Image (tube, rainbow, N blue to C red; front, side, top):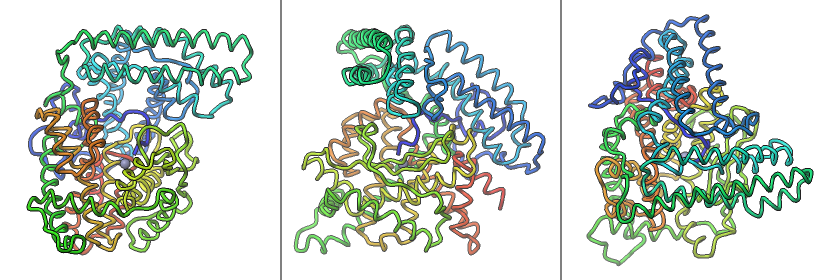
Length: 610
Ligand code: ZN
C-alpha cells in the first residue's frame, strides 16, 4: 500500500533503544545474533514517569516537529499542510551544511531528555525523533544519495500535488505553481552541481521521470491556465515561467543523457550498495530487532517452509483438479500447474469493484464474531474508484488515510476499475487477483489490515507518530493480518485458499530475499528472475518490474517481511509464555495501541506491562 508520499526513515533499533547517550551517529550497526526477544530492553526498565518532564518533552518535541516541517516545505505539503506550498528547498551545499547544523543542535537538545524518565507513549516519540535526526545525518554524510541518484531531483511531485488537490481556489493554486516555477531554474542548477559519479540506473530514471515532468507542464496545463480566471497579465507571466521551466528541465534531461552516453560500455557506479551500507540502511529505515543478515536467513527459511506446505496441498488437491493426469516429478512444476489452473476462478471484470464492496462488511463481521480485535464502526471505510489523478502508478488498490492535519477526513479504499484494460490485460489482472487472492488483498488493505490498523493508530498518534511512522510495522501488520485471518478460519481452511496464500506470501518473502541478495551477495539478474518465475510463480511482467525496483531502491522491499516475521514470532512467543491466559483479541488491541511505532519498541512496552 502507499499510505504516504514521504520517505520513512528510522534508526538502528539497538542504538536508539539503548539510550540516547549511546546513540552516536558513527556507531556501527548492530550485528551478531540478537534475537528479537533480546532487543535491548531499556525502553521499559524504569516505569516511573514524571508529569512535569512529560509536559516539557511534549512541548519540545512538538516544536521540533514544527521546525522540521518549516524547514522542509515539500514534506509539509505532502503531509497535508499547504501554508508553505510556494517555497522550494534548494538542494545545494549551503542547505546541506545548514541541515547538519540543525540536526546536531536538535540532537543535543533531545539528549537533555532521558527517555527512561518519560511515559511509554513519549518514549516512542523520543525514539522516533532521534531515529529521524540521526538517519538524516547518515543520509547526508554517509549514504550521499544526493550525489549519485539524479532521480532524487524532480520538480514534479509538489507541483502535481498542488494541481491535483483542491485545498484552495484554482487561481490561488496556479499562483502557487507559478511561485514554484520561478525557483525552478535555481533548483535544477543546484541539482546539477550536486550530482557526481551517478549510477547508470538512477540517471536513466531521472531522464524518464523528468520527461514526465515536461508532460505535467505541457499543453493540458496551458489549457487549464487559459480557462482560469487569472488576469491576463498573470496568464502571460505564467506562460513565461512555464516556458523557462520547460527549457530548464530539457537542459537537465540532456545533461543526464550525456552522462549516460559518456559511460559508454562501462557500468558506472554500481547500484548495489554492499554489505556495510546495507546493514546501516536497514537499521535506520526498518528499525528492526533483526540485523539485515538475520532477516535474510529468516526469509530463506520461510521460503522453504512455504514450498513444503504448498507441495503438500498440491499433492492432496491433484486428483480433484487433474484426475487421471500424471503429476510432474518436479515439485515447483506441479505447484505452478495447480496455481495456474485455479487462477481461472475469478470475478467477471465488471464485478470487480462490487465484489470488493461486498466483502468488506463480511470481513468486519468475521473479525467481530471471532473476537480477533476491536473495531470502530464510527470510522467507516469508504470504497471508491481510484481518482483519475492517482491512477497509472500500477497499484490497483490502495488506502488513502486522513493525514494528521485533516484528522476527520474519510478513509478511502481506492480500487481502480478495469475499464482502461484491454481484454488480455484484464484477464491477466483478474487471474492474479483471483477468487482467493482478492480476499487476501482485502484483508491486507482493509480489514483487519491497513484500514483497521489506522483506526487504532489514529487514537494514539500525535503529529510525531503520524509523520515519523514506522513502515515495517505498518506493512508488517497488514501482512501478519492475512495469515492471522486464515488461521482463524477465514476461507474455511480450504486447501485452495492456503495454496493461494502461499503464492501471495512468497512474493513478500522473495522480495526480502532478493533485495538483500542482490545488494549484498551479488545475486545476478538471471538468478533473481529464476527465483521469481520458478520459485515464486510470478508472471514475467511482474518479475521485470521487480528487478527494476531492486536496482533503484534498497531495503524498502524488505519492510513487509521483516515487520511480519517480527510480529508473528512475538505472538507465538507470547502464546507460549502465557499458555491458557493468552487472549488473541487483547494481544492485538494492545499491539495496535502504540500508534505507528517500530515493532521492537512495541514488543518491549508490551512485555513490560505483563
Ligand atoms: Zn500494504
